[in-house]
Image (cartoon, rainbow, N blue to C red; front, side, top):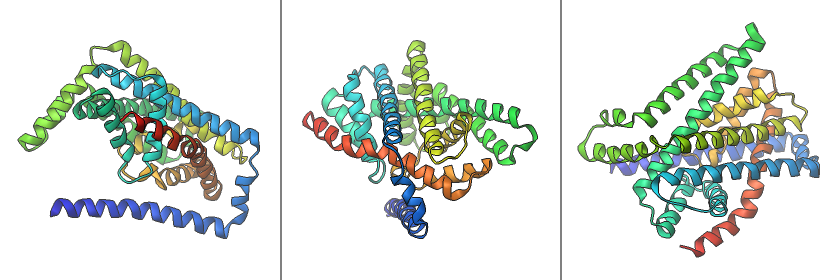
Length: 315
């Protein structure tokens, strides 16, 4: 009964966040109609660039997915990985990141991948992504601090400390997962996480694969950052690539295990909050954040259903 109540409360909180965000956006544009007009003022060239960057993001996600399955003896083509990446993003707008369940089901039925190995691959992939994003975030913050010197807001230093914590935690959990297992109470739960930790350790001997994954993650990170940068720039908001990378690092590290569908509202809130550190007004930052969201939704809503149908035929 207690477990059911916790799940119900978690589900209600998730949908409260989503509903609150949607209501806020509707209220914002109804009271600021001139802001909504900015969407229609985008040129075809700007839309083409935004969609192109989004497709590049999906390519990075596809390569990540292809690589993360290799240690577990599962090989998929880049075409299938790309279709899974887009379909996964579409399904993630349903409760509890349904994309993960759909992806796991496809790999189990089509390629015989066990759920244990899938969860280990997913966890290892997420830890590496967090590690790469946090390291880039620390480097970017260091450069920003060196350039701006005394004018840096104190919040930036707090975020740097959080990035450092993310680096340490993700590094330990990836390279020394059994240390974490010892802290888990209960023999059944400990046994499950021990199996997962041992499955993650399969990555360790394959340094070449690790470097390929890190390189792909760096490219994916840059694609996300460029999309944010361009979304701000087309509104005339002057942010640098460094600042866009700072935004992306905070988003990647902050939402590592978010359960809110598509991070709706959370990502926009973070972008608006971080923009204040660089003297960008909240209303303009929100419109830029919504443009960034729309850019990834366009190919998702167009290609996602088609890819779901194709993948579904093979299940």
